[in-house]
Length: 374
Image (cartoon, rainbow, N blue to C red; front, side, top):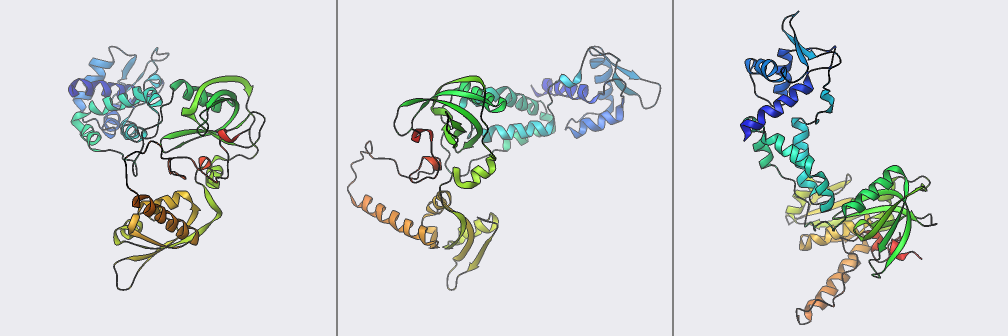
């Protein structure tokens, strides 16, 4: 199968490399550019491709008035190589790697819309079997950091309408299911941004006649209608500042604090290679192989959950707010596991401050979600 695919992609690459009239390109230059794209071919095979394959079906001609011969398209040619799929080796490799990464981020309906592009990249690499690129694609993967939940189920139509409203700056009328109350309400949303976090995508925008920004989980939108009215743009809105301000990570203070903790040598090794913060230091502790960590970090739940994930590989000394919360959680765990287990978890409420829920849906969060609107 590779032998039949390889010439096809080589022909497509050649048609894209040959310039439109009055441009010309020499055979040696074409050969060099093909090799740069990963096609292993000799000069004689290239000449056969041009003369016997492409020139008979496409409006390309040789210019023999100078040596080496040059190739170009006829004047007013019916064929435009710019309309060909813009696929090259680096783009195909990037698309192949992106496919495995986006699988953990985007809803299945959105992934289905990207399937033709992913398949084209895969076919392109398969067609270059002789050059080893297919082997590369089979041996490279992208893995999420930590346990990744499956993406929330989302209608492709909802995704399309939300994206269109955001790009065209139009209002969107939605029927939205409340997470906390389980009821459905109608909102007229003025879109401002879109954020993908963990396995959920959120539409940021103001609703009805309110100016404050809310977050709408796309998979909870039951129905959507794209309106002709222009959306109201929030004054001075910057999506990066919005995120940094703690919209998706409940911050207990607007400023950074110093995290002081003793860490296991394996954690110290990890943090030495991939620091927790630009301002971080690790110092050996006397009479032990543990190290003292000092790092400037935001006082938010995201960092605290990272600490909880280290279990007994870390001993936190500061900030005091986290020391108290860790002590409280440990006491709750001791109480919980001291009781006999009957394996009946159907009535157990979800833990507060879950790391998979956005900060604005957690207890004590600064911003409001659509469920909290009047």
